[in-house]
Amino acid sequence: METVIKIKNERLFSNHFIILGYMGIFISIFVIIYSNILLGLIVLIFSCLLCFSVTGKEIDYERKEIKESFRFIRIEYSNYYNIDEYSKVSIRKIKRIEMRYGPSTNISSTFENLSYEVCLFSENLRKRKMIKRFNNLSDAEFLLNELSEKLNIRIIR
Image (cartoon, rainbow, N blue to C red; front, side):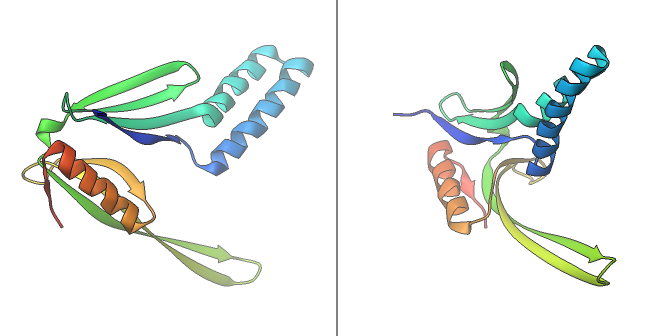
């Protein structure tokens, strides 16, 4: 029987920055070959950081701790949090609104994005630890029920 819930590893930066990182890797190769080696190496390291950084979470319900990790190639940095500080689990509904304005067409557009965060809360609801963000409510409820069963904590709606 598994004692660890592994939350999917995700890229640390959005796709825009990852594309910028790949462009930086390509440019840094030319800078190293044709110009300053030190400047090219600095740009290469920064670009690789944008492209290959990964973050993830693991919940060990037997040892009652959450491990948040950040990885860059083979280097890993982790923080451990005690689950005993959190006594409730819930789903937060997050509504993000983005407005875009096109000066050439003189038209503004509004985009709404609805997402759901599964979070652990302390007894007085002051401390919060976000576990995972979902775009689908049924996936969020599945993880919510799994956490509630395995950690023996109360669900709040």
